[in-house]
Image (cartoon, rainbow, N blue to C red; front, side, top):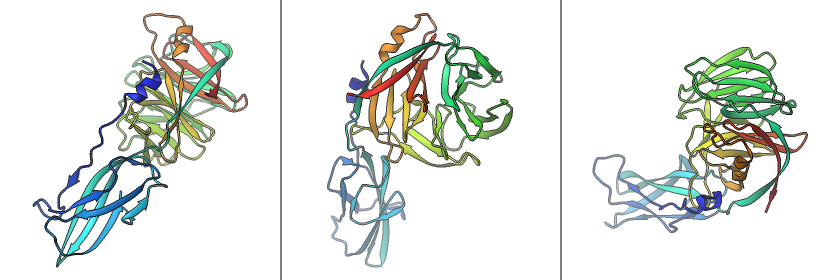
Length: 342
């Protein structure tokens, strides 16, 4: 199945569910009404109260995910995904709080990108690549599988391993990113990450995850860490305290995109691999909206075919060359590519 067909099949049924009176166990006769069935970024959200018993309502105040809004609100400066509308309704001498769930979809169709292979380099066929990133011109790689997980510095032109440490046997290595001379490496289900000195590979710190379920991919914008956990969410972490400050949810105009894996920050956008797919999304980090799709599926046919061969998983941007390097799990080649919007 092509990546474009995959997106078409992601059409979601859109449910708007009402919750009852939060102050009593009795179901409220009131409910929140929205005038649109499918809510997209940029739409005006028009709200009113369904009042079948003709209660004498004196005041209504609305919130969207805890932030006050008017009953006519343009959905411009918000992130995508699941939202909760809350209405506090005053009538007679009583007050009720009612809620309604909505989903906000992206308002553009993703652009399709093609690629050109510029160079092909050797890659360790035994490396189950989970994270890939350039830092000061040097390539760093994190690999997975229990008892086989590694952190490496690699000569990308020759494939020579310049520096290597093995993770303890119980850890399954995942994504990595480098910020301020520190390597941040995730592990999968142990809910634990590691921080190393980029020059010596000395372990400097260990951190635990917050509400994110697992460790999958990680990148940074120079200030903040962005972490995926195999869902449609990307979490924003403080690189010093490791606190998950917030998250974005990744959506197209059709619905959410789950199974986000390896991440790379490229010129103000997040590039994300989808687990078990040989494609990459281009994501707006402000909203979570998918703006582009790159189908790298043909690259898998250019590597040595063998029983342990797995999908593409490894995206690294080289800012000086302005090219992207991609590889996969147990691939024997590393590809340098340039992408072009179709």
